[in-house]
Length: 115
Length: 114
Image (tube, rainbow over all chains, first blue to last red; front, side):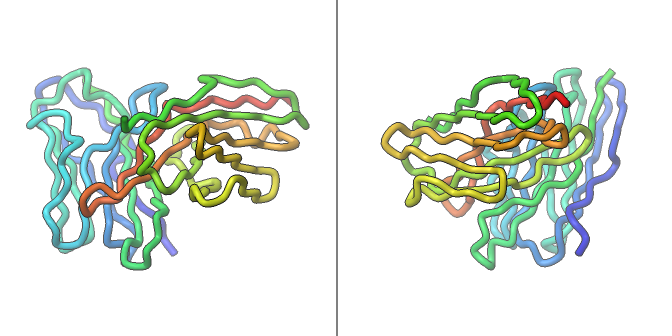
C-alpha cells in the first residue's frame, strides 16, 4: 500500500513568514511523529500524536512550532515567524501502535530553506 | 541519558569489505534498537532491529551485534556493495509515558568504492 507522504517536498520561505508542512500517514497507523533533521545531523524528535490522546509536544524547540492532527489522520506542522535556524528537513513517520509494532515508517521529508 | 552516540561519522570501504558502525547508549530502559538506512532525498528506512534479550541478529548481509553489559551495539555489513552507500542511523527506543520514543544517533555516511 501507499507509504507516508509529505508535502511540499521543498519549501523556500523568507525569514519571518509562516509555513505549513503536511503529512499523510499510512492508512490505519494510529501513531504519528514529526522529526527535524539538520544538515549532517541525526533526527531530532519534535512531537508525537497517538489516536485521540493529547500529543507529546516535549520536543518542540519553541512556541513558534505547533502541530495538529485532524481526524486521527493527516497532520500539519506549522512554524510561525520562521528563522534561518529553522532550515532543515522535516520528517514525518507513522506507526501501527495498535498492532504492537515498534517500527516507524518515514516519509520522504520536506526540505525547508529560510532565506 | 537519552543520548545515543554513534561512530564513525564517515566510513569508506572497498567493495566486498566489511563495514562496521558502532553505537553506545546510557539509558538501560531502552528496549528496542533499530538501524535505519537513508539515501539522499529519501526518508530513513528500517534496515534491521534487535531487542536486548538477544546478542546477535542477522538478516542477509546485515548483522547487529548487541552487548547489553557494555551498553553497545553495532551494525556489520558483510560483502559491502556500492549500492550500500548511504547514511546509517542507529536508534534506541523506550516507552516514555504513553509514547514510544526513538532516540537517534548522529549518523554514519558510508561510501563503498567499486
